[in-house]
Image (cartoon, rainbow, N blue to C red):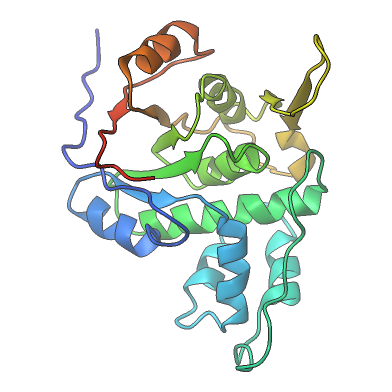
Length: 248
């Protein structure tokens, strides 16, 4: 018997850096439509909110629900300023991403995405999605795993051809390692580089399979839809079609 899933009539755009934040996504989701958070540099957004004093305590509330021991305490110790920054005090920066980063750096990315999704979903059952840029390759798998630990319902991806990410979602839902091709200029013919993510490195004690979110690539041409439908390495659940007024 085929299960028919009611799809949202409204998909709120996942725009910019903290423009489509958890509050906007939550408001849309509460009325039964698809609220979407922007996943762009959420790790930087989180640590800056903490350094600004986390007014209202929302970040700390979400951080305390993160299911990896020790990460919450370490991040709060390093970045939280109870009184906020002085007017002339610069933000403490986080390390730039590179092809291989430390477990702690990945966990900060996981935590930030977890917190944003957790807060958007807190206290209701409406759908919440996350929007990621395919071309911003290095943090994407850690971002997805963190969002999935918080129960994200949809993943939206544009700015490239995300045909490897259905398989990534399948793997992460089962806490298995995931790998994607890493685009590097100047490689010799036949050479390739990859990005890898290993969930078991992060100490998640509950290995119950996660809900695999529905995957909606963002496209602007029928040829891209055909490519993804035929060549993606896992299930594609639909497409979001952008016209010339979409911007970006």
